[in-house]
Image (cartoon, rainbow, N blue to C red; front, side, top):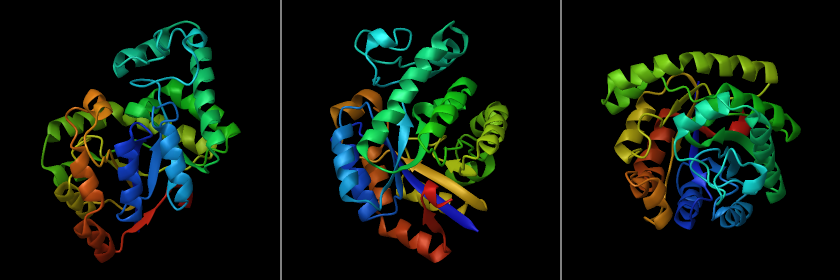
Length: 283
């Protein structure tokens, strides 16, 4: 049986993204969204989501390329004086693993983000993280430990199968295989910790190797190459370009991704193939 979670990332980053996520849910195939609680348009995203309760919303934990919930003086090793995390995920990952005393600051900020989500009044569908930083063992442990206090039901598993992904995209087989080999130990560790924590997850994901380029044609080919089980397909849709997108995603084809999620061809492909669209909380 093939089931698909169609997720919109970066909910709350900018109003055009919020518009696209709601429209892609109401008129298209999108089933879930991941909310950046500390982003500039988070309040707008929450208000829109409250009006459309069928859209399931999760927490997009941000520890790189974004703003913190806590003030800078409370987490000085995580953010600059303006409350901004580093824009360098790899460098941040090493710091989060090695810097003495940083665990308490990470714990405090992650808890603050879960608490901010709780205050929205939205039901927590899942959690994931910006730039998949929850692949980091320390971050994963903290999200699972803190998430237990907030009823976390499910967590994204960033497990993109190399050959199905390549068959759909026909680009960069070597890079996809290298990423799969590199990430496999972390994926297996995550699976083990998810089982122990009794937190559910998807089996596979599409969108990592083709992030920002999930066009209609590519989305249709992904649907033709779905493995058995639960696959998350995630996108970054927007109704138009804006300053925040130009700053954080200058090469992404966000408007084309929005068009893909609202395409009649994509909706028909789901129906013709008998693929069930679900949320994480349906697992």
